[in-house]
Length: 246
Image: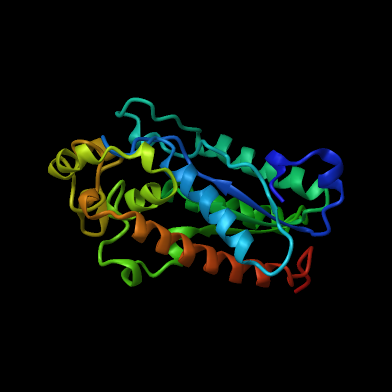
């Protein structure tokens, strides 16, 4: 059940206490991929997981803003402060729980959100608001099984995802230029410390990796793998005590 496509009487008839909340960002993904990449991927994985799960799940609309100030040098990037982001996610989880959907898996598509989502999931669970778990799709998938390139940023992995779900939003003619201005890795590391706070400090055009190796077929494989991993998590969360009883 997708809340964005559902009337309130239909929502009231939902026979489940399990929900997923996709969370992404609106941020640069190089000169070739859309600003909505992270939100698009989070929503697609949420759908795939709900479809793969053997039971009913409420799918909330995606939250399209995240902790993305590290991409502020690139036009179109929008961001929330960490405190505002945590409050927004907390409020949406609380809203879902108010209607009886008090087992919530937050499906994350942006690495910059991960720490804050773990904190929010812990706090709402400890306070008895809901049982919440934060799921970052690219941490749940063995990327080596669907190609040999690391996650990067706007590289092969994310570009493949968008090519599968929204091919019209990817500009393949810009792949070569994207690769030329890309960084091989995220950050500037010295003695285990990342000295760069913004992506512009190490990636001329915001890209980490090589998008030219992306394929729609790989995007489909990534979606299936992430959806299966999410379905497994949903099965476990469905059996948790709410509130937790240790």
